[in-house]
Length: 72
View 1 (cartoon, rainbow, N blue to C red):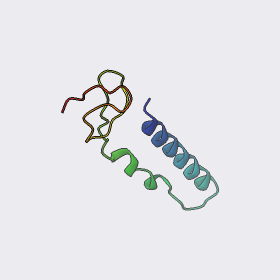
View 2 (view 1 turned 180 degrees about the horizontal axis):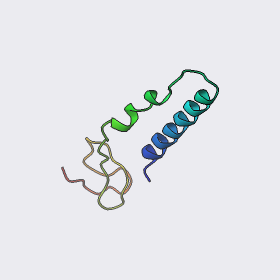
View 3 (view 1 turned 90 degrees about the horizontal axis):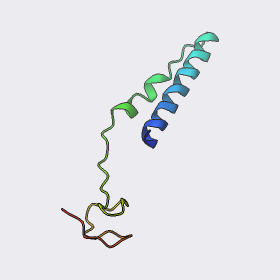
């Protein structure tokens, strides 16, 4: 599972837990809406070296780890 997905799910579960506790105590509070935008944020495209798999910056022509030439 991707780290971003795991964090989003953990925040979602936490918000549900806080909502349930507040509901049980009779406190009118809904926490879920604070974390809903995390589900709909666009994913960033990660560029990787075809030889070693290292992450590379969008403007790089060569891999910083293995020195392989990167395709455009």
